[in-house]
Image (cartoon, one colour):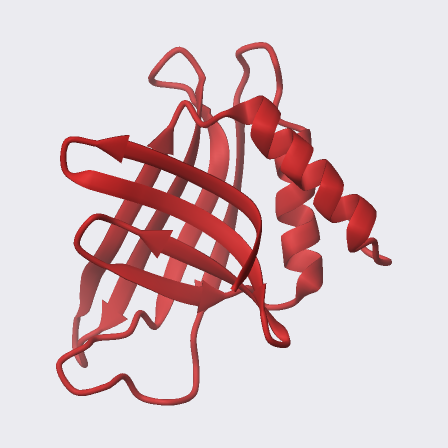
Length: 149
């Protein structure tokens, strides 16, 4: 995967990451935790453009702000013993319960037949906003298209 927008950090458990990149013909979000990782596609390049614009539009002053994407995977079944997320949410925003600190948040869900199970959760609190804005600007410059948001 060719990363376009990436937020990586370390904690005592190990390395975490939320990365958006181009993988063949698709744009995917890769969520990584110290013990596992998973990827899920964006519906189309316009969704990635909306993400880049949401990063550019993150307010400098504390105010309510959140953009959320619903991502889903269809197609091939997971390998035996390795559940694959069927859907996930990804959000960019300012946390109104924590002095409007910026965050990126990913939560996947698994279809368990008659129930839904929680999958991987990766939350980047206080991401490097200036760095993410620079990556978003570079993405929009390189991959411009008809729909920006």
